[in-house]
Image (cartoon, rainbow, N blue to C red):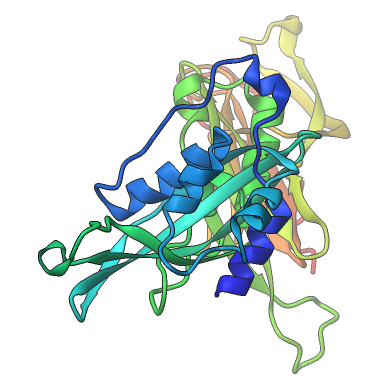
Length: 345
């Protein structure tokens, strides 16, 4: 445990540069009222270059072979941030031992940040049995290791034999970042801040052998904007080959002719003249039973004129299998299928 702690502290070497001295000093914290406060005090001392104070938060077991080695270990780092998790405790032989989950983000003098996570063990000796000088809560040992998690989520859920921290959903985080980067300025604020709907689609490739395992595609449905009668959404999908990508929806381009060139008149003809792709899905929903995404775009509020698509998941992607158009503004819903690939294998 001690060796691991030394390796971690030697790596991120926390110090305050001469340039920082020109600015306001980091806050002075010297609080031994509980175990987490001691850890925060330790890193307050390190950030302020007060290494004698930092050394003093340890008990008989020190984090380096001597004080000079301890100070030298902090030559390379500019600043450090610390977060603590839920503290657990256990009594033993006149003392209370505290386990403190900790995450640290250390930034070196080049501006590069590293995250470390682990646990500190602190000890509080029963004050009623102590003799002078009184010993407050002190650090007994610590073990920190490099972490690949973001600093905000790096604090371990517990120490010792407790449950491991939950595994980060990397695909979801990538989808959120992609959605935010592209649509932050285009979506309604309230909808944009909602969590996406998540779906897991298990399937076998059409070329898979009988004993091959199932594959998984993840589907993320983000609500984006709502108008008077249409709500627009964005979908992302993930698989282990292509990673995260935005789902595109094929739509036919229509040539619609009305009597007397009046859209309120009778529809004389409808023809598909091409196809285009869009990232927007209007009034959409995913049905896990049929593995389809459906869209329904109202051309006006009553819904008597509209277009709707059905997109079927097969072999790892969604394909347009049916597209209906109701081009008549006649007060009734009477769509006609202009694309029908439902019989495709």
